[in-house]
Length: 116
Image (cartoon, rainbow, N blue to C red; front, side, top):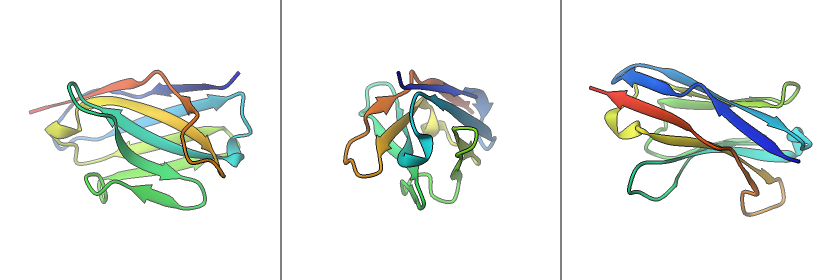
């Protein structure tokens, strides 16, 4: 049974930083492409970043957010710096097989709230 569990969300002032973590279990972690998404109230879910042997970022977070992974610990991280009000959302960790197009597994999400 695959589980993805996010942690590290919270309330932070604009300009501050947070580090999200995602603990994976029940899958051969190194064979999965890992991603972070977010969904703000009333908005569609948005891709943020992904990582396998290469990283991708949404333009809205490029230069501020950094995705990383530790295959030995089955962890993926999202370091978020220079946070803005518009970064407020529920952040989700997701996994997809390296050869797959769609993300198969999702975490329950962690709330990030950026205040002024």
